[in-house]
Length: 397
Image 1 (cartoon, rainbow, N blue to C red):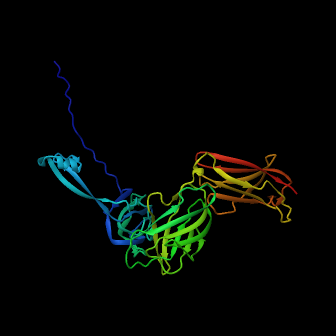
Image 2: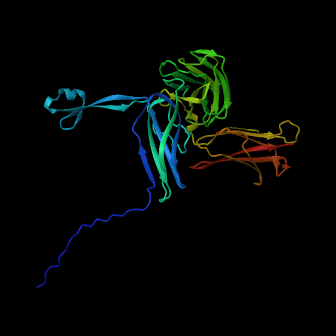
């Protein structure tokens, strides 16, 4: 007689411990009161960051909270107030009052990647939340964060400013008038006020022309200039504290949506710029239906059909202008003769992101090209596809 084979089961626990520091540690604060409206300027920190490590700080800002009352039965089920009142007293549970963020709160900002970086969330605000990431690409190294500081100024308008752009829809590559209106969100005493308005000119905007500025609905003797990517408007005295301000300007747009952001400044406080917050979602956007309709990337093309590069100053140059939509890739413009031989590659003459301008003097390797018909090839390499547009130009003498 043989005994049946005996089977034994055992539970074993294996623990594997990695060596070194984690690749990332994330810390998040509670909602922090700023003790009233503060115009946050920059984020600073004191830290040790060995090679291969970095620190990122993201922020949210808001002005307050709404009280939300929730009703529960004894079994834990949440019900409406009417259902709670209708329930028998022995079946009623807790009434919980929660503070819920109001609609002034922003989402998480772009990361602040270096100490002293300009504050990325809307400001001024009364509340702040921060999220810090300690990141390492080396398991033997980890950054050490000793302190985190938010540098703030007293805002020039403590209640904040809300704004909107009008109209919200425009034609592609058409010079059109716009009005940016900003209004104090409330009335507070002791504000320094502002006398400069700065409107950021986003990618896709060009040919910007200032027209006029109104304070409290009346035209004032304002001056303006385009500095870099901003339209800077100087208002005459006195400083604006409680009134609405309208800035009228003309621009040519080529990107949809085009987002116009604005800020204000007091000339006596040059380091205290205060942002203007959209009065509602989308209030700072202009949409271009023509830009998103259709599949073509090259639009509004204009070019010289014939030119005579003989040096007499009359019609000596070939000129080409067009607009590129749906991509930020730079176009390539090359010319060939009818036999397919390369003649020239043109260089973009302007700095606008979407409107491209080119010129050609009829030169090839330092020599004037023979008369004849030449093919102009415009090539735009987008992520999904490559578009090529061909035109002809006549060179005559």
